[in-house]
Amino acid sequence: MNETRIWTAGLVVIGDEILSGRTQDKNVAQLGSWLNVQGIRLKEVRVVGDTKAAIVEAVNALRSRYDYCFTTGGIGPTHDDITVDSIAAALGVPVVVHPEARAMLEDYYATRGGLNEGRLMMARVPQGASLIDNPVSRAPGVRIENVFILAGVPHITAGMLEGLTGTLEGGRPLVSVTVGAHAPESEVADLLREVERSAEGISLGSYPFFKDGKGGSNFVIRSEDERLAREVADELARRLGEAGYATVDGGI
Image (cartoon, rainbow, N blue to C red; front, top):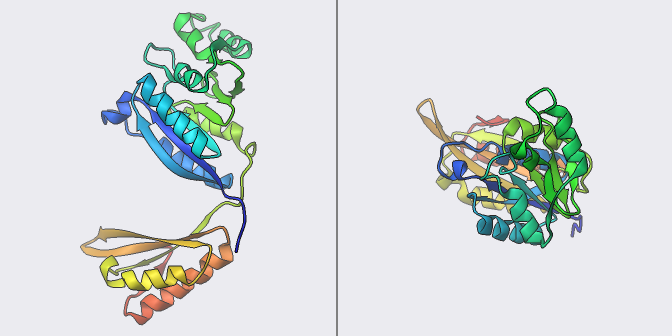
């Protein structure tokens, strides 16, 4: 049996604007893809509003359940940006102004109106935290223990993740191979189950679609072993062909 260590992460998406539907989250997909490259599996996502108790509960649950816990949102300069305070409460530590963060913000805002009280909020961190570089707007992300506090604005989040690339311990990234067919899930469910059971170390997902007046499914094989994923995809295509369904490598 394969005893390879699987590294895992959870994500807490924070913001009333996400729950209300006013803002569409893009960080789940972005973080999930980035984590996979680092050899880390995103296993759970929670979306909570700007409520301290909800943030504390979610962060404590995910940081204890997984190797890493990420949060996005709630680290700006306004009164409802309470992520840092909430995570400090979750960890049982006070909030302090980080001297490096303050210096960075003073420099950034020197020609932009200066460092006022609201902007200084973005230099506050849970005591004992280190900083995550923000190449876009300089206000840093925060790392403390296994918790990573990131911005909610997707392009700023991307910049922070770029700085973290290669710094986290992880395993082998998952690779995926897709096979598409105009095959209803209900007609090939048994076949899919048999193919998935035929090889240890793979997962097989089925994703139905309706395009150009035709229904079908894309079948995605995932594994840490690229050769195995390819072999299973070929076997699935063969079995679907025998059942009368033409397949498209790479999906439809």
